[in-house]
Length: 222
Ligand code: G3P
Image: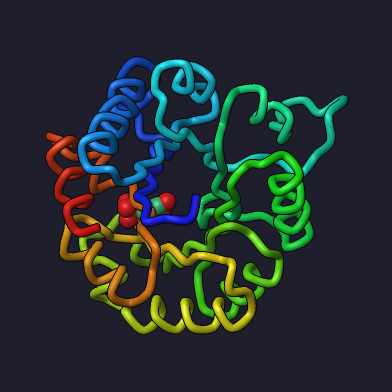
């Protein structure tokens, strides 16, 4: 899976749990089929397996633990993700940070299990460190812009273009995504022009009155 793609992070928003989350995942699938753009749904862990049975489009986890199977109460293993039918996972999201050691271990276990890996980063240097680990994607997301109304492509386009340049210098196989404040086709168009292969977003879709229309608008720029 090498883009262009749209990743919709459901986070822990209460209006996309359970049946409402399934409805949003079905909307991601519908718009993805209509437009030919890969739209990934990232539900909460408790909804992941059910979502996988509900849609044929990719379902990713919002994260997992760097632990082997066994006495691990409350942890999520890569084996559990594979068993649930996840096709990928976010790693190190700014709202769920990991230690570098664990990011490395998780990326390696994703490769071993054919699970797409997307390491979330907050600046260019962290993006370079992440690229050294060889994930499928690095997603640059300045934390201060997350949840806001100003897209990273407007507030700080340089962080996107510089991340693309430096990541590709380190590992040409790693694709760069960007996120934080992304809301519309203009933001997506700008992201692609800056060299990103797609976007990662949450509130612009999850909080929308009409997520289908928003997703169609986002996909129209790809
Ligand atoms: O995972 C993407 C997320 O952190 C961006 O949030 O609400 O700014 O689209 P939002």
